[in-house]
Length: 298
Image (cartoon, rainbow, N blue to C red; front, side, top):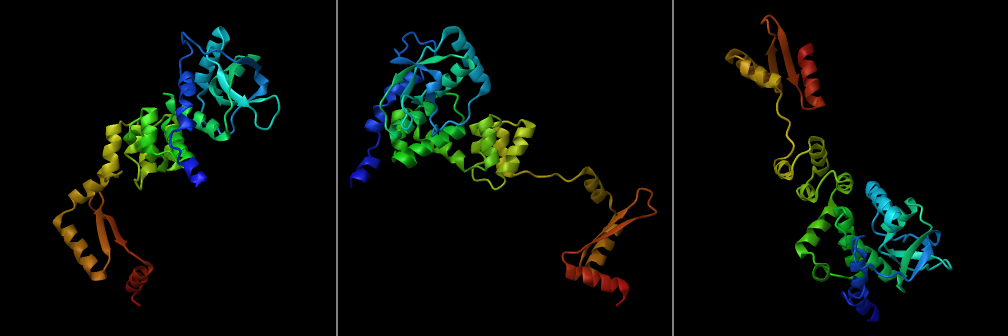
């Protein structure tokens, strides 16, 4: 009973009480009222959270942040807790980008706010922090919502209320997780937008259509049209010309031969009209055997 109550605590202490820290975390580096750090920690004593839900860190953006930090320092301190297994070390709860950028900027210390969080609360803060950031790709965003629902029992309605996201937005982003791996990678890399991808959810040919969209640089409207109509290969001009140029006698002979041997027969005259090619199409090996016996007279 207690376990069930804990799992269904909704957005009680575990999330609502952590939102203040998260909202401070997503404040810009140029904030006029930065939070005061509890202490400055040697950067080598700080460790990344192994359960950090965000896997993709844009290298260009990291270098830009590193340049800013090298010039102005870390304005907004990171949030850490005491490392659960290593004495006198710390684990990042929120602010891994700043920590990574500070290493690139070759800082020796980093300002930090120390909090006492459980493993569950650490994961919740990390997920919420990432979801609240504008530059998060749709796949990581959807994975964050799924983690909050599966691990902590939160519903889409509860997430919508606290995060300021519509329920339909949360549902649509989570549906993108059902796409093939290659399509999800396009989203992660920024080669497809969520609008492109939504048109492909549940489509049997999603990967091939996505490849085509990326190759051609098509719009969302194009993606929706192709998803509805499918990828079709038009007949070649040569094939169309051959069909149009056949005279009535040739078409009649094709029909008579096809009826006589029970297989499709096509006759194509050469340009000079003196020669050409007759093609017989068989559906299976039995038909081929029948054809060979007929040709050999046996």
